[in-house]
Amino acid sequence: MTGLRYVYAVCRPFDAALQSQLTGVAGDPPRLLAYGDLVAVVSHVPEADFGEEALRTHLEDLDWLTATARAHQQVVDALTAVTTPLPLRLATVFRDDSGVRLMLEERAAAFRRTLDRLDGRVEWGVKVFVETERTERAGAGAEPSAAPDRPAPRPVSGRDYLRQRRRQSRADDDLWSRAEEFATGLHAELSGRADDARLHAPQNPRLSGAAGRNVLNAAYLVRRDASEEFVERVDRTKDDAPGIRVELTGPWAAYSFAGEETGAGAADGKKAGDGKKAGEES
Amino acid sequence: MTTPSRLPDPYGQGQSANLADILERVLDKGVVIAGDIKINLLDIELLTIKLRLVVASVDKAKEMGIDWWESDPALSSRARQDELTRENAALRERLRELDPGRVPREAP
Image (spheres, rainbow over the protein chains, first blue to last red):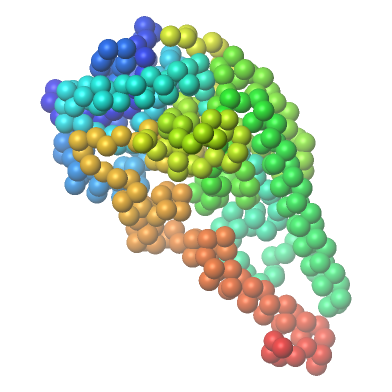
């Protein structure tokens, strides 16, 4: 089959078979393209959809983007089950196999370094949400109207009304500061159990569909054999704090840690990682 | 090469995985390599990436009725201002109702 080559990930050669039903972004099953001690995982995609102009147009199409992102992730996910893949960003496309091999050749040293660093590790995502009355209403998409749907008992006097508002706002303030303390503590503890950590921008509830406001959105690089303990630790926090919700996702391929370490301080990653830098190759 | 040891069961993954979680990773993380097909995701007029939210272009999003960023106080200073103004007005109205004659009509 002709067409372009879509690259999902780079990894070391592996023996295990991928799921037989696995298909890539354009329905073509992913194949392994070896170069020395590295393997690129590629599938064939039609130029009509993945040529420059078509691709640019498609990326503006939410349905297309969604389907492609899920297919990309599915392949990377299947790889994570059998090896440690270095996931590439969505829509990395070459003309032909030799273009892919050339890329592997040029970047072989960096790939090896990163693969060694990530070897035997996966990424876990941890998010903390605050569920105040206010954010729940916003999350549900309600019009921020004046007062009528407030569930508190209808105030009988102006003084009652003000008192109620003050109590509500004090309760909110209290919840926010507890949430901040909770998130900071959780991040410190989980960072201690991980080989690396990144803080990502909070997600918007209108996109994620999650209730509440996202106050912590972090990724942790954890050894496979330490993952069970890590997950248990996160699970234990779940009932700790009323009004605060913890969500765990994973195991993911180490997307958030796939970029080359740049600065000297980046190695321990305990500090708030910069999401943008994390993905950038020099 | 290490063979993966057993992993806990997936959390919030697979077909049901939150689109936001997937897009956050495949669009914004992962290794950036310039392929033969030159697409810089940051050049795509996706509101998505600038705001880390993924919903198609601003116009398209508006068409789809997704315009929350204009009214989300965290994203728009105008919305923040609007919210304060609205709240202020609502409070005044309420006070006037309850205690007529003691509330000035205009802000000092």
